[in-house]
Image (tube, rainbow, N blue to C red; front, side, top):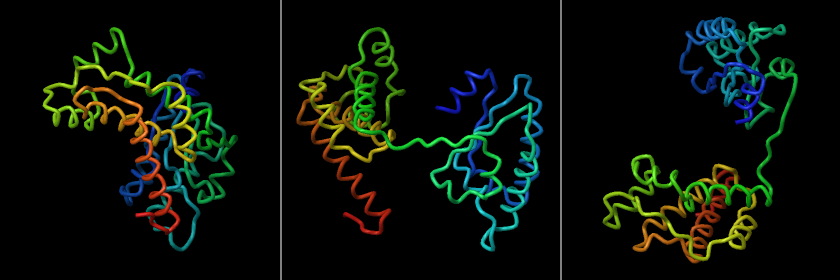
Length: 243
């Protein structure tokens, strides 16, 4: 989102490349990257190229690096050795320490996007509740009329309750700022994606109920379930499974 906003603010075209898509190209990766940079240089407005999971092919050189990946890295380094008036790169990675030193040397700015703090988590949860559960007015009516656009989990929950379409609105029953603040305090360490999934699960829980109501008890049950799942995932990462 930051890369898109930067491109829009600077008046640049925007393109995205997943680093994980480069390695499977094998020997064709280097020519494909040269073609990509040639295309970027033809942008009439200038191009911001966002490379997600950049460490997938811009990692440190070493004996473990395959010839194709090394060729892709060298191609990227060759095309970014000087300042360019035609394009700029924005790299994203969860493992900046794995990037090749020559890649890091080419970066003019480094920004850290940490996990959201408690106030940010509260704002994110409130935003998703308003956007996906308590939405009212014409936007809600239009969304209800287009049931396939809803998350699959919501459509499955509605089908299990015998609803042909999950068009009836979810009613918030006792889920207000106090419960949102309580959930924000309980979800320390959650990413924005995990918070979005939490609210999606709460929406599905409401649609799974006969009355399509998101009560305080249902909300707390979903929060507790997601907190347990988060702890289990952390256990896997640390080599100490919680399940």
